[in-house]
Image (cartoon, rainbow, N blue to C red; front, side, top):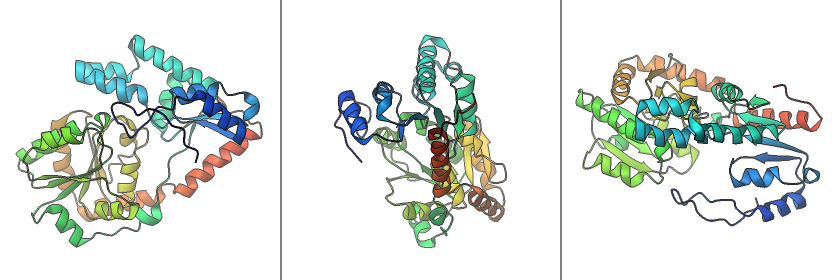
Length: 343
């Protein structure tokens, strides 16, 4: 790992701008990688695209963040309501067209663009990005698949109260739509629901979430959970995962929860919807807190043992982290051997 100093981003200072194009060029020349992979469409992409072709083997693009819909779409949805969200999702408007044009440019300069979900593969193809390949992310099945409920931890998470235990997992950022999740949970409680909600994560929206929760005692911000084993215990000890982000390019936290045998309440858009098998999940209209409340009620009213068994079976069918990287490295070998990816 080679670190390059860069200024912190204003919204979330745990992320930094990779602005030293000159240093990146020097590192690429010195390392001469077989695969030069772009993971950010911003200055990092500029640095990779302007690196001399003689300094690397093949260049690829890893699309793991749908930054156009995630950020432009979220802001537009707040300003204009669902109509704005729908327009953003289609990539309409001058800003959307310019941004998608930039993504197409990056894709054309790379030998392949890797995506983790089928819906993102299809979406990029619709926007004219060439050579898109689906390589799904893997799950640490030896950790999450082996997790079992911990009664003591469950009692701690419930705070001594009776009822069901819901968990939400992810970065506390605006695009994750924690506002929808909390609003939906509050409406579920107002309708007579008895569950408690524990949110695992941290990020720039933490204080805003605290303000939304106020003095309620049915929501807990547990903070960032360090270690997969501890997170797996939390997931296995709960009754359902609740998720609200409609922009997931995959949804790793959802896959980990399913692998731990946890049923899920998921929005009907994005990578989350792709994992929403009705055998262990309920879906709701993305961005609709009333629909979310109804979906929580519906899931908790189903047979728990059957839901858990179906979720665990689905988790076992997912690729492992080893499977993911074996597929990815095989793709690299094909590209280095001169194979051309169609479309």
